[in-house]
Image (cartoon, rainbow, N blue to C red; front, top):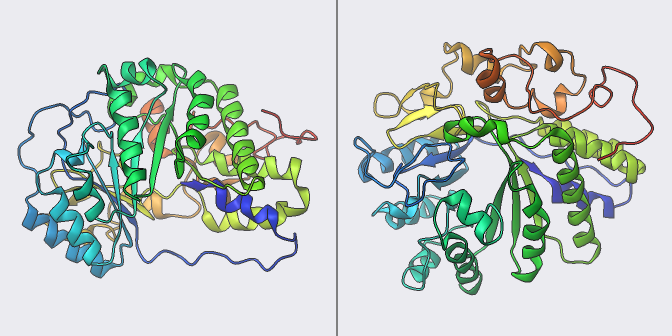
Amino acid sequence: MLRITQYLQMLKQAPNAPLRLPKPPSGPVVIWNLVRRCNLTCKHCYSVSADKDFPGELSTSEIFKVMDDLKAFGVPVLILSGGEPLLRPDIFEISRRAKQMGFYVGLSTNGTLINPQNIQAIAEAAYDYVGISLDGIGATHDRFRRKVGAFDASLQAVRLCKQAGIKVGIRFTLTQDNQDEFPHLLDLLSTEDIDKFYLSHLNYGGRGNKHRQHDVHHQMTRAAMTRLFETCWQMIEAGQPREFVTGNNDADGVFLLWWVRAHFPDHAAAIETKLRAWGGNAAGVNIANIDNLGQVHPDTFWSHHTLGNVRERPFSELWQDCSDPILAGLKQRPRPLKGRCGSCQQQAICGGNTRVRAYQLSGDLWAEDPGCYLSDAEIGLTEMPVAVSA
């Protein structure tokens, strides 16, 4: 995840200001798909959920046992997801215990089940953040979510969270079918006083894999990223910063560096140092996934590869067992990349980008990532032009 606001806020400092690099995390962020059931059947769902119960899901006591191991292992963050996590009857019991244990706890939801009847329980769960997915305004969102009225319900959820004092953000997955909605969702940040905006690039996993032909062309991605940088900077300049982040395409970090070089060249060296410390793609390193059955994956888009099951071995053991060749390769720096990614001079920033996307298209985990939208010049394979362009 690229935290754009953190980098652009550095542009308000003197170019030679002391640089504080982040400490290595104590453990991976765990995205936990507690339940597979969902009340929607979204076009780009990575977990291929449905509105039915799935057998064999972890019980409450099993989840608590895993949480004990995660805490002892140093995991700092739990993102409770699904399916739709609010369909799990014990979701608030799990959430309260996670908070009591000292985890940063996020709730990832489609928002349609947040209503006046349960908003108090959600507030009392004391989530550090609630993320609600939107794919556009009105009918566009409803079409992606395959449910009339889904947008109105999700927008109501945003408003209820704001009224209850809960930090809330929207997540937007950019595709060729909804890229025209992107500016309208950015406008929504101000009109609804939304705290955070997460731009997710389409990743080829689950139901999203079937729709990869609708992924935006590279020029559309560049235009969207440029607009995101500009919007973030304008809000910082206006003294009303919002939290802007992107995910599922670590080329974003390199593109951000070129944008800074073009507009704030005196700050480029410091930004580059921070981006290198970030290191790009963290699947198998600082990002982990546990699914509803207890299977552990390198991240949420790796359902095709399982490291083991927490019912059989603790997560802490599975995450350190590099006898798994894929996990060993993901933890390796630099990774054993091939093709264009193997020759890229920006590997220290992007970390080889999204390996699952390369695998889905080529069958080779270490092949070049087809989602990289950077030019050969921008990754150091040819001479760089004077300025980056959208």
